[in-house]
Image (cartoon, rainbow over all chains, first blue to last red; front, side, top):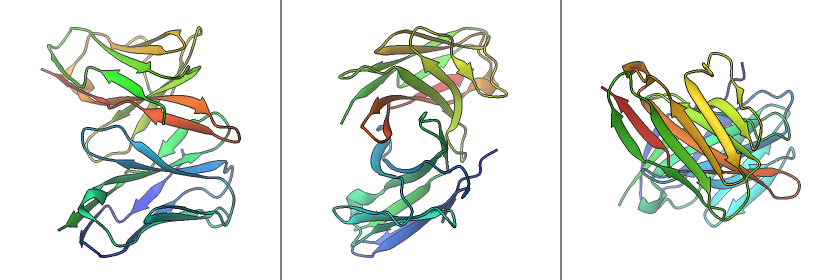
Length: 112
Length: 117
């Protein structure tokens, strides 16, 4: 059974604060690590797909890094805004078949 | 990005009845669709992998006779919860894959909240 852990479980920050989340996953049989942003009543939205050790990807104020050797990925949000409030999921992929193993997600709440 | 539509978004049914959930890829052809289930405070758990024109592959512990999956076309997969019981109450969500070259992206529907009373 693959274990994908995300921490913290929830986070409450003030508008303008920067924040970061951790996703840990098995370091063996790695193929890709996915990050999703999931707003209530909407579909999970893909943020990043990361495949190479040392990868660093950025989309606006959100960025992510990947360490496949030690089995973790960080997601950073710079200058959080209320619209960043959502659940952030990471998912581990063992092969090119898109079978994803998800963490429980991190719920971010940004106060105006 | 690609759009996946899932219906209904919520359903309440009586114990013993069957419920069908549809998952459609609106602007791309999905050879593979996945069905997940999420219980409160738990992660999304894969139930089955559905390939167009063939039988679904179920994860360990998921009853194939209870959760019937049909993937008759490249744009539609359905999940039928047969003889539903209160313990089947959960959040069900589908995803469909589209190839982007090196890796395959998964696009999700909005999910279905099933309550069995």
